[in-house]
Amino acid sequence: MASQAAHGLKRVGAPCAGILQEVAFNESFSPELTLKSGTCQVATEATKENSDVVVVNKSHVPCIFKAAEADRYTLFPIRHPEIFEFYKRHVASFWTAEEIDLAADGDHWRNRLTDSERYFISHVLAFFAASDGIVLENLAERFMRDVEIPEARCFYGFQIAMENIHSETYSLLIDAYVKEPEERLRLFRAMETMPCVRRKAYWAIRWIGSEASFQERLVAFAAVEGIFFSGSFCAIFWLKKRGLMPGLTFSNELISRDEGLHCDFACHLYGMLPTEERLPQARIHSMIRDAVDCEKEFVCDALPVSLIGMNQELMGAYIEFVADRLVAELGYDRIWNTSNPFDWMELISLQGKTNFFEKRVGEYQKANVTTSATDNLFALDVEF
Image (cartoon, rainbow, N blue to C red; front, top):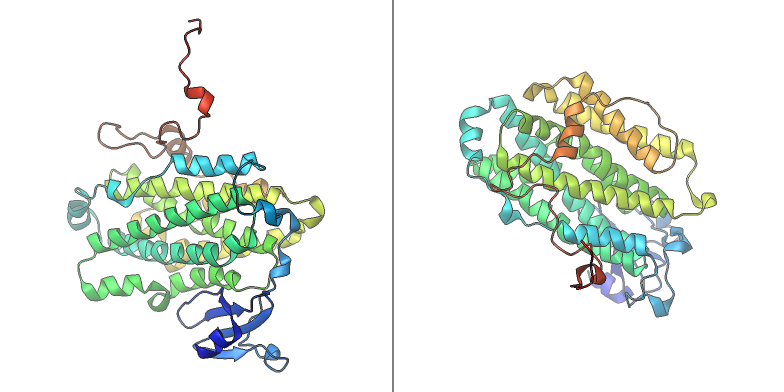
C-alpha cells in the first residue's frame, strides 16, 4: 500500500469476498483511489471509465446534517433533543452477550429440532453474523463521516457498540450449536459459501461504496435493518411460540428491539430533510420493492421457512406488511397495503412475556438513563 501512503489517502470502503474492497480519498476528500479484487488503481481520467473504479462523491450529504466547526466537537448545548433522546433510549436498553443463557439450547438442538430446523437456524445465523459486519462497515466508514451532528454521532457510536455485541452473539450461537469445525467455518464464511446469503449481503454492500446520495443510502440501510432481518426474526419468534431454543429466542428479542430502534432512527433523520431534498416516491418504492424481492427469495425460496413448519405465502405477506410500515414511516404511500398475517408477532412486541425471575424481559431498560436530573430529586413537599 505504498501508493496509499504517498497520496495521503483515507480508507472508506469495505473488504468483502472479492467485490469492492476499498475506496480511498485524499485529504480534501476528492476521489483518488480505488481497490477492487485486490487491484490498486488511481482514478485518473483514463481509469475513471474503467468499471473497476468506484468513485464516491462526498458532496451528496444534505447541509442539514453538517455542523459548524465550533459545534462539531462538543455535545452541549443539545441542539437536536429528539436525536439525543434516540441515543438515550439506546443506552437505556444496553445488554451484553453474557446475558444469553444457552443451558437448555444444546438439548433442544440435539433432541427437539429436526434436521430441517437445524439447517434453517444455522443458515439464518450465518446471514445475521455476516450482515452485522456489513452494517458496522457502513456506520464506521460512511455514516459517521457523513453526519456531523454530535447527537447523531452519539447514536451511531453506540449503535456500533451494539452491532459488535450482536455480531459476537451470533458467532457465539454458531459456536455453541455447530460442533463440526468445517461446517462452522462454512457458516462464518457464508458470503463466500452460501449463494442465498451472498445476494442479500451484496445488496447491502453495494451501497457502502456507492456514489448514490446520502438520502438513498440512508433509506437503503433502513431497508437492510427493517426488511432484510424481518423474515428471519419472525421465523425465530415462531420457534419461541413453540417453546424451542430459549437462548436463541431471547437473543432474538433483544436484537430485534435494537434493530427496530436503528430503523426508526434512520426514518427520523430522513424526516428532518426539507421536502425538496427528499427522494421521489417512485424511487423509494423501487428501492423497497427490490429489498422485499430479495428478502422473499431468501425466506421463501432459497431458505424456505417451510423447513420449520411456517407457511411461505403468509411469510411473504408479512414481509410486505413490514415493508409497508417502513415506507409509511418514511412519509410515503404504502405499496401493498397488506395486513399482518401473524397476529402473534404483534402480541410478542406488546406483551414481553419473559419470566423476570429467570431473565430480564427484552424490553428491559437501565434505571434512570432516560429520566432527567430533576426527575430523581428527593422532595419533602409532595402531596400524596
